[in-house]
Length: 123
Image (cartoon, rainbow, N blue to C red):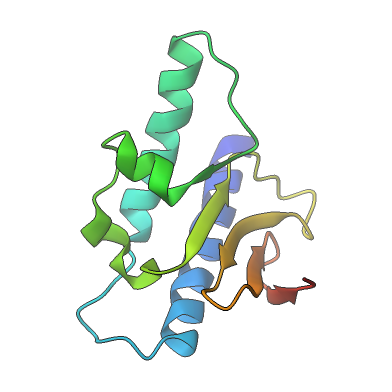
């Protein structure tokens, strides 16, 4: 049950991130962020690491998921030009935990928290 709640929280956070990208970006409407594919890629990544006996890190970058073939660049084209990492330790009991962090080209960082809020982080 805790895993289902954590995934639901992650899905809400990804939806918030999609909204953030839409607001912050003046990119064409052809670019997108497929939250379902990101969630599936995160699950596969963690499962593969556990199966190989490796330690699952606290977060993973979208670039790592693309490099491993778990995501396509087109699935997250709305994040093009941003360095995005996603938490693998989402926990609904810690609403201020960062679920998704995006570093913008100008160096600013924006985070989506477990409570669904979006905040600009201090440099």
